[in-house]
Length: 462
Image (cartoon, rainbow, N blue to C red; front, side):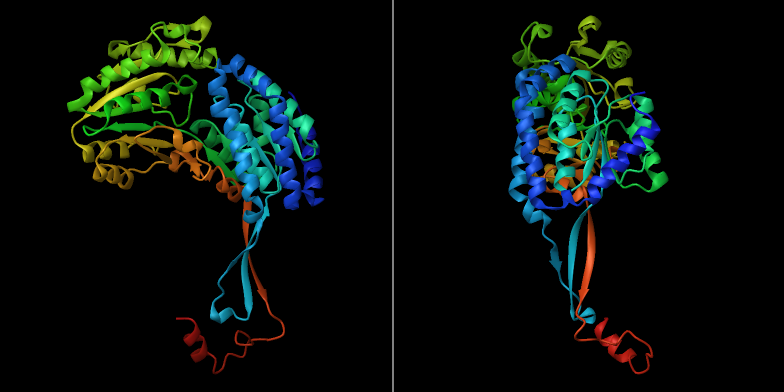
């Protein structure tokens, strides 16, 4: 054990004392912490890039664009807008409640717990941390044990930057995580699998701790006959193979209209070679699977679907390499369609009728993302209106997650609540509703006795 229950209790007491010192309340303090964090990340940027390579074989380009650069960008955005977000928001007051003012105060929760996954082990620690800081909270971070190099750099950054009573890193595996999720935090932010998310939610419910769950699911891509197939193929392969498919919003499977399927599949194959060359394993731009357990899970899918492989399928366990693989002839009951793939395997299913295929995928758990490639506006609108999912793109994949102006989160089985940008500030604060009454003009309408007051009340409340 990296820490005991008693040690965790002492740490939480220390955080509570820091929070009630009111240091986190001012805008100046929060802005200063954002600056300090950005400066520390810049100081250790090369170490972060090296750690991401060691943990996931991420290229420098991918490490910067999908992990570090996004954090820099969001810090800049939050710094620009934080003071405005913090201002109490005045709202209208009904005539019956006059004379008074009504407003909403964004109140910090206290100490929040952030549990991060392995797939984007730096960004998915820092993004929720930005929300916690902007909201005026203290935080305890639990990085993924599956990415130890990145966890080590994160710990170094946090310990060098912040008071341990304000923000702290606690490491561990299953036993430590269990202690954390059952502890009296004021808010829990979890990113990970649906299975573990349910465990976290159950633990939080014991104390009625507010919680945000960023989960996943099988995110579909629909390609109809009007789509620009060359563009669609490139953008789908890119979105699928970023981080070697270990992305919670990666295209999980493709639904392509039958009339264009053959041409589209050829373009998918061409795109893979165009991006990663003829000897794909030697490409410096394709990452690796995080560990042997995840490799074995993906290898099992390939073994079960061996008769449906039309491209790729080779593996190298010593290198944790899974070749980008296309599957054809699969059905919704195939092994590859049972759970989120979370790897470089792409099942392809053909369809002939858009409403029918939408009805089919509506029977599945609501995914974190969905995508459609079409030049037909009515088809695009039908997709958006008839299918429920967390967020997504028309004629692109995964880029919606990089827009700080868009809330990012799931619905139903794919998550609870959203964050990024202003949504992060809102998520990590309680919207406290206040009415401030005037005492110089007393209104006795609501006080007994009520004789002869009903008519007046009816005229006000109607």
